[in-house]
Length: 111
Length: 112
Image 1 (tube, helix red, strand yellow):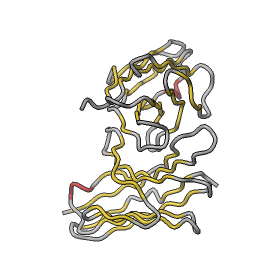
Image 2 (tube, rainbow over the protein chains, first blue to last red):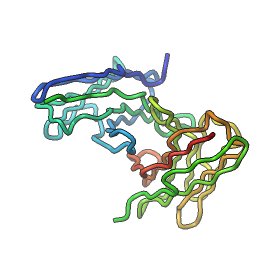
Image 3 (spheres, rainbow over the protein chains, first blue to last red):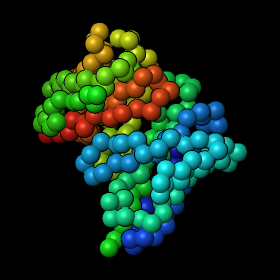
């Protein structure tokens, strides 16, 4: 089983739609979780950290389910500018690997 | 606040050559990590430096080596380049290994 797994997509959604991405991780001792956004041929940029209580930042909501080792990202009222690849990132805080990235889920928001 | 900067932005090399990539960390950040991102993949961890010492290493061969300097800038060196080394090389800095990392623009390396 891969350390961090994501549905690669692509997700093609119309403007205004709500879209959800899921991610699972294998290391139950993992402590920190993040969503990064990466535009084509650009560097990853931190979108938001994910907390056990869930957290919201405008149209974006992140959830963590430790029992199921599952992280989600919900985007409401999608904008064209949301088109990007969304990377699920886990910090296992064990071994020598600070951050483990999923392959990313590609989102295309269509007018 | 100065962000993470990397140089060069693009580089073309041939098999067997050596390359050095450079990274200046964000102000106040003493931890630098290097990642390799192949097309269609997520970034893969190469190694991390904390206060000039290697603080962790991913599954990369010894021909991938690095340095961190007293000002926390860093270098990634790759010897005996192979075609599969073609990728985007990303440098990220953070205040410590548990904090979110902030990435530079990356160096796109092409091996011919």
